[in-house]
Image 1 (cartoon, rainbow, N blue to C red):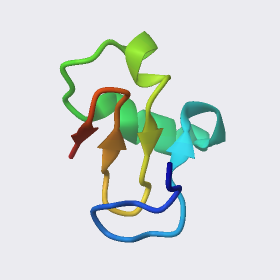
Image 2: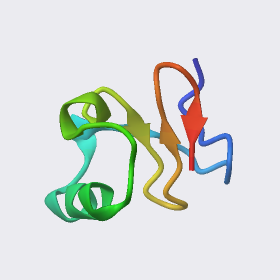
Image 3: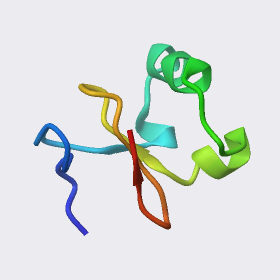
Length: 59
């Protein structure tokens, strides 16, 4: 599993625990079909907003 963002090639996808408080606010505001608890298991690109899920990728 690569840590690079497949959408924008940014150097690192972050887990929920790696996000800053400001980044968490942005992720929470973004519309998603997943609950917050589910999203805490995803990885995020802070550059383009890409969200990697266990079942696939979302933008």
